[in-house]
Length: 263
Image 1: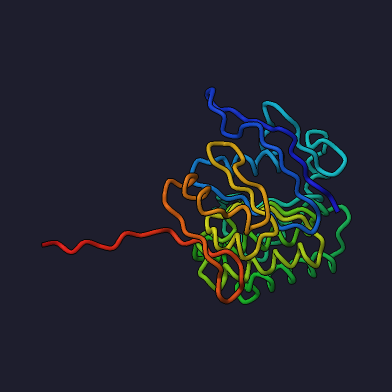
Image 2: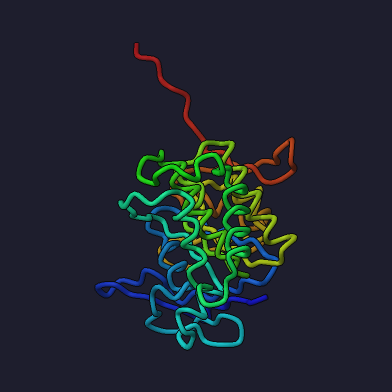
């Protein structure tokens, strides 16, 4: 299983640091969430970790080799990426979209292995009954699950997920994060997910990276990373952190002022 290491990476656009001197290590068996307000640099950091962007300074390592030295095909067998936005207008069926995840193995895949990976990914995302549906006819949440199924079918030891729960209802948020968490805990995969929901991050992540203005403000287990004072500063809104009475994980609650009644 591969480890992903970013060593003091920075990335600038028009002289502004979107990611500024960030170092993180994602180990096999770890589910890491990256959180922070809009514009914090979360997606940019993820794209640096995947190799979609090259850092201006610093280095990203995949396993024992610098990411820049990996051939694209070899890297695709090592790590799978769910982008924040997937644009696909052609009328591929859901099954065909998921099959795209097997592209890195075209020269070695047997029909049985490919079919097994596709069926398993469809089942994990509850899309088996929609396998023959045209992708453009799906709802936003169904498309997101199909995109994730493609990533799961790739069967790589490292998964990068940018807002995997976007457009999903509560049931499917829990389904998807449970499935990817199991890949980490039982399968030994390294999973990195950009999440906006702090409570989902607290419930599923082993470690949380809190970002703001391109820098890492906390990098620790959920109970330590989700500090009320830090979150209030980072998000510019007062936060209260309590214990979830059901699961015992931190529960982040934004403070709200009582509504004023006119007159």
